[in-house]
Length: 199
Ligand code: SAM
Image: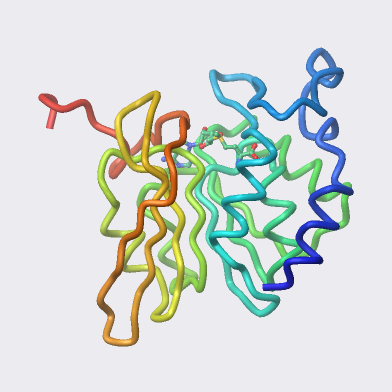
């Protein structure tokens, strides 16, 4: 990964473009902010950290689950060849696409639907970034990760999760590393977070 390119783009990207008018005055603060529908734009320093862990290369095909505001999508699209991004909330996906079109990205493909099942049509992916918390590691996402690929995903109960780095080795085995504690909104959907006892 080109670390210098990531740092430069990250610091040049105006986060106020990705939030509503009432929130713009807070956009430069390093905290998550509301984007509507009970969802948040992630803390910028965490977006940077997760991208550094993901290590997208300029020829990578990336799957992102949870488009949200599109802020993380922009960074992934700058750092890789193609980004396939899935968002379950129609209005958020449309707003994000408008913003990213305004920034002239032509390597982003959008889907509105349940990203907990991935996006099988274009699999495998060299990198998978999940920006909502799953209860368990979704098998479908593991299956859609290319050999040699990397996936970053928060796993754990609502309000506190472990950020995991999943790497798939040459013999299709996976290695799971815990990177740090994080707090994300829930991954909904078929392989999303399920309350223990409701399984
Ligand atoms: N990375 C985003 C950004 O920079 O704005 C923040 C993402 S926000 C923390 C998590 C997003 O995941 C929300 O927009 C939420 O609607 C979405 N989400 C939750 N479950 C999902 C699912 N099963 N499929 C697709 N998107 C999902």
